[in-house]
Image (cartoon, rainbow, N blue to C red; front, side, top):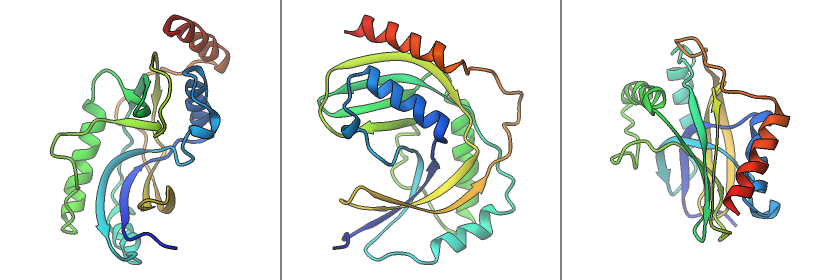
Amino acid sequence: MQPTQWRYFLGFIPDDRLRDRILMLAEAMGIAAGAVIGNIHLTICTIAETDQQDGMIADRLDGLFSGADLAACRILLGKARSSSRGAAIGSVGSQHDITIFFQTLRKLLAELGIEPLYRKSGLHAHVTLSYQSGPSRLLKVPFEWVPAELCLVESWDGFSKHVVLRRWPLLPPAQGELDWGEPAGNFTNRLRQESLRAA
């Protein structure tokens, strides 16, 4: 069986280290491992929804992004929330860097006549953890993510299937990077403390 609609979006996919950190957050929130979605990502914008697969969209964008010299943006994640509607990690603090990245992306896409969908209310950066109902929890454990690649993803509507069609490397952020990272042991201890406070 195939879906009746394909969705194409640009976004960021965490590397293994960040994915492990995100899974630790999910565990601290009491989300069962089987409930965490397999395709963890952060959507910047949806660029097309079609009733047939678009076999040319990756090549069209390749010509646009290959020489664009896009600089990465800093994303400070850390407000993890779960409820009866699912769970997600939202961004905290200033949205300036990711907003500038999105606006740059929007100008580039305009060269191909592409207008991002569903962004009239602005960009609210988040990483979805689960669509299943879970315990009501809120954890605040801020950590910074500087994505290394911009990804084009094909999503099969209703099938929870994502296919990464193309990856474009990003340059380092324009300004000096702030060190929001911390050793995994420290992060785990903070999760335990936050989990106890939230219980």
